[in-house]
Image 1 (cartoon, rainbow, N blue to C red):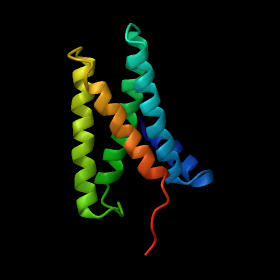
Image 2 (cartoon, rainbow, N blue to C red):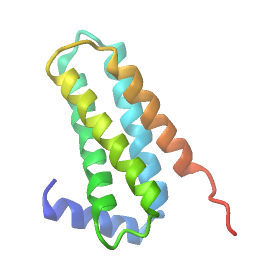
Image 3 (cartoon, rainbow, N blue to C red):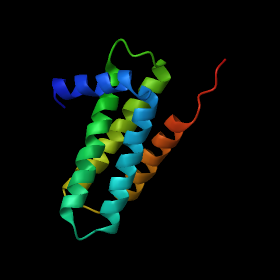
Image 4 (cartoon, rainbow, N blue to C red):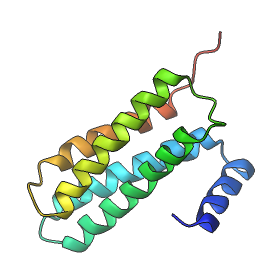
Length: 124
């Protein structure tokens, strides 16, 4: 992802909805695009768009998680990195034309991420 795109993303996060809400919307969009691609199995462009968008948001997760200024706990960082690497492998499998089975896993992961981010965090 380009530096300009990253800056634009961060600016939008600061000026409108919360970053958490925007991240939830992005994961929900990824799940929807992947589901649409699964339904339109004869349309390689739909799959390519879904995989590209999914890769983009998970690259952002990796960048934010590995940033030394990240406020996340080490255990959460580790889990997010592991999950993002799993997502990368599944995207690669799909791009190489192996099985379409990884679509279900990617859809579920993105839906779960969106659901967690849409939930109201508990305060101590």
